[in-house]
Image (cartoon, rainbow over all chains, first blue to last red; front, side, top):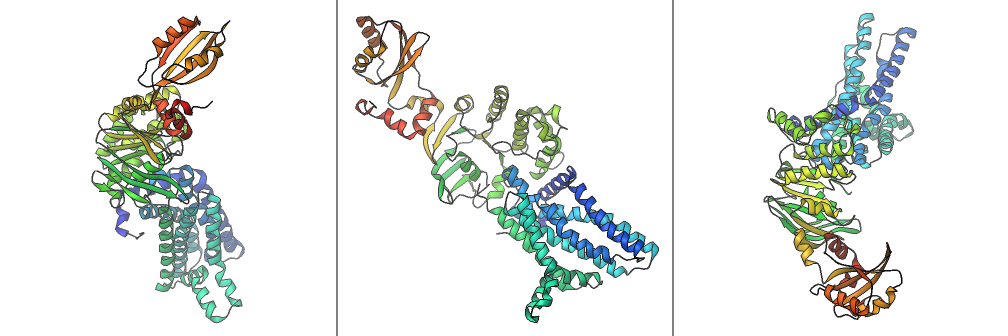
Length: 245
Length: 327
């Protein structure tokens, strides 16, 4: 039923929907509010490190960035499908020549684009520390890559949450619960026996993000985020295909 | 050509559409008539590939909605009830979105959009957000949206609901215009809409088809009865003395006193379809010296048929013999 068709990304219907979603973000306060809040929080932690701690490093920014993403991603994905269901516009959208998977991919791309745009603004931190110090380039690239991969997986899971009901609050809470669980998993494993701990560690966001932020690019970490992304998109498309009313 | 074959749709527990079959010829304007919840919208949602049927199939130009939904969608324009458009977009950007979504490439895209703007009269509101538009304009944008890719088949769900009389007239004019060259299916629960726009009517009730034909045919097929209205000057005359006498006339199946209006006591008679009792009634009144001031044969209307077919016990009473009428 829901197969991921990568060649479909070139289709004009996906492009059309993608552009519509970006307009929905930028024609409304959502994008600006969410971006400002992210930059405000990230900026505070970055400046703290730089001016009070005297460290020309993005480490704290990347660590705090993850936590902010746990709130931030559900906030930008909650409307993607729930709003269409609530307003009734889904009735039209799904009768256009576009498959359910294509709809999901277009919306996911829009969410990821908003995250990327937000992270682009933080390049000023990156620029600053390169002027002031001698940071580990691998760690910076790995840190950004980690946030983007988390964004990709988070947007897919958030879309799935948004496909569950017409209520955006439900979508937010569900996506937040999933991301927060994945986020705290590696903090609870100290209480668990080694066997389970290993599995949970692999499932946790922190474990893979830590690997990446050390500047180590490992296929197992990539596979983790890719799997979450594909899983989220497939579930979302599957829920979208189930139309009752 | 469209062929709906034994269509059935079940939602958890309830049957919304129960074994519906009909055909629509190319170029026909078909009105789907029925009370709210009769299954009109569900049938349309299956035809537009919004959702699959529980069983049965819809074949549009040789393609099945079950197997070939993507191809069907390309040649189909749809406007759901209440025009759920993207209200945050300005009209022009919205039409551009739909045209792109429909796969129209420049320069045809721009040409079609311009045509739609002209046909639907949207020139004045192009840069306005859809949420700022009146319902009438919003409906026009909805029609433009359904037509931008020049589809063979147009499906409109309650296209005039919630509009004021002027807006209704405008939208109907547009619908008639499109109906000249396209196959068009529209649903409504407003009866004059059907007479005003459709070649053919399907009346649907509780998930099934209860009547199918042109508006004239249906009126002609009106089962069993016609209605006569007679009025007597109320003043000194007691209508109740006349009722049993009129009831005794051969051919009368029921007499009902419908009150006094402007000094005229009105009676409503139901008679057999073939018998015209006006002359008999006149003679009866003259013979008894009743002050007859009004005598009027009511033509059967679509409204009567609709009520007869969609209200269960009503139809039993009307079609039943005289002896079964309510005392």
